Structure formats: structure tokens, C-alpha cells
Image 1 (cartoon, one colour):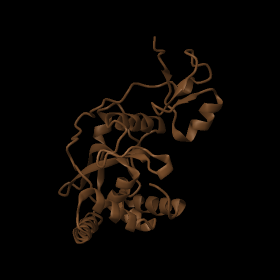
Image 2 (image 1 turned 45 degrees about the vertical axis):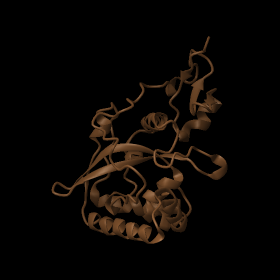
Image 3 (image 1 turned 90 degrees about the vertical axis):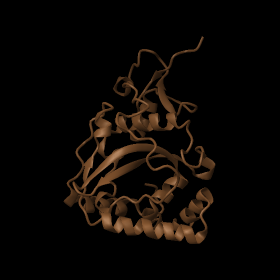
Image 4 (image 1 turned 120 degrees about the vertical axis):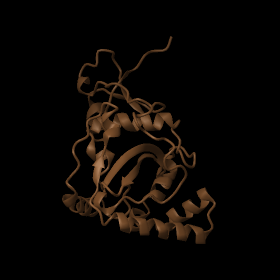
Length: 238
């Protein structure tokens, strides 16, 4: 008879503290659990309700395949992870990975620590230029290689542009010339969108029972991006 686990929601920053309090890691589920059903000493991490597999209003057909998907500079580092509580982010990440079968939704790769390949969540947005509203419409599971391609500008900052370009060519079948034209068009679009201060619409999360923290005002986001880049430095994953 299978033993039902008492699952925990443990943000990454609190994993050592939870482990010291008795939490255990289930590698197959990629989730922390309590070794005792009474949660003694682990109550603060008691699991909340699961996030629905399809977020209300989510368009899982939006932005299929691999492409350079640059975020306007006015919104750098102002993303879903920065706008939700760490425990809510852990719940979202777990749902995103699970519904993708713990595989990249673009290239099909799984997590591989020996190859320094991780699974990461990426946001797909739509842009209403008339209202200047950037709306979250999809969350997708990407391997770190595909995620680096989508954020090609950040790949340049980190010195990873050649690897990102090679991965784009490998996955899409583009010729080198086609890849270069694709990257150039993506940067042209990025430059146009970066001239606008966008209002972020995170209603997709609210419908799933997650309350986002209001993002920084558009005027403050450039400083947030600058400080984050300075703190992370080259060679750091987003």
C-alpha cells in the first residue's frame, strides 16, 4: 500500500532551513516532504492547494517553437518570479514542470546536472501598443539552453551568444544566415518596444488564486535591471 506523502512548499532560499528542521527531498517528484504526518517543526511549509494545470485565460498555443523573445528593457527582471511570494513561485514552477512531463516544451530535453542543463519557467506575453499593456498569457517549461536563446540579449551580456545561436540553429533547422536575420529582427522589435513604459497585466495569476505583488513603477524598472545585472555579473543564469 502506497504511503501518502505530506508534501511541503519550500522556497529554494529556505531549503537548508527546512532540511535542518527535518524535511526530506523526493528526487523523483522534485519536492520536499515531511517524514512524519504530524508536520512537527515543519508547519510553516505545509503545502497549499495545487495550482490548476491550465491557468484561467492561459493560451498554451501562444509562441510555439524556439525563437528569440526579448523582453522590453523597461521590464527587465520584472517578471512573474519577482512579483509573487517565493512559496507561490514554487507552486507555479512545480505545476509548469509537471504538466510538461519534466521536459522542455521546445526541444524535449530533461534536466541534466552533469550537462548543467536545468528546467526553467518562461513567460509568454502579448503587447497592446494602444493601451501600452503587456499581458501575461502563458507560462512554459524550457530547458536552460532554450531559455538562453529566448533571452538572447542577456546571453550576450553573459558571453553566451555563440552557444545560444548554435542552439537556435540546431533546434529550428535555420541556416546560419536565417538565424542571424531572425536575431536582428528580434532586436529591432525589442528596440521599438523598449521605447514604451509598459503596464504589466498579471491577471492570469490572480485567476489561479495567486496574488501578485505590484511590480515596480515603470520609471523605477531601469534601476532594478541595472542593479540586478550588476549583482549577478557575467555567467549567471537568469
